[in-house]
Image (cartoon, rainbow, N blue to C red):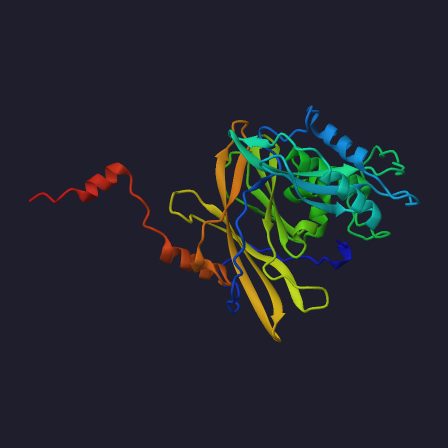
Length: 365
């Protein structure tokens, strides 16, 4: 995907008085099992070896056609290991050239079946983002001082190679360490330099109770696997100066081919609500997309619900997308509309047993 095609997205925590727009229709998307970036037992190739063995296995399988020019950049590839250990959804995050990128994708798809990842004793899908050095690549030594991220395009590359390595390291680990006294935005920019540079939005808000501070949110255009959608990154503190890093996918609402008129799906707001009246607030993401269909402009809206699952056995916060059908949220264009629909469809909050018994007791004569 060419970064020149990307444009900043608007993310706002909507407050009363936010302007509304006409409601459209939402395309229902198929539910998928959640994809994690870090789990208690990460997927492993036969024989183990961790991340180093996976990178080496991909590099060994990269076969370039005779006469292919040497690559001048590493290739960053993302893929998911499914619940049966199979490789899924392989895509290039940052490429070198069409020929080299195709060779790296082919190498990833040739990987043997993994021992799948596990979380809380169950098999789960896990995403990897790997830096691959194709044959012929001359890697320059890393400077001692990491340069500041730059948003200026240079020879088709948005950021310095060090920034790509920093971002990949953060996403692979699924966590980031914050320096004492470091400002929210400075911290996010340092550990996710690529994503932060592509986003113009940043928000600190309390989603789940945490003694270590608020959660940090920012959006960015989706990667090749979600090219016309949006990604929402969340940094969640779970110990002193240590944050879990998680990516929520906002899929494309309306897909259009090159040359047609349309707009990529954008995240218009995030907000928090107790969807099921169980005392735990969920994160809700409101997004919209548009497309010219039969000569008329159609605007589509969707509201996604993301749940906090509590801490894992290793103390990390866990989340997943709640894909339970909620047709009453389809096509709602504003946060106020969504809140009103939730209020109309929510069951009454359950009273504690002692209070419920007192309420049910007949009055004394």
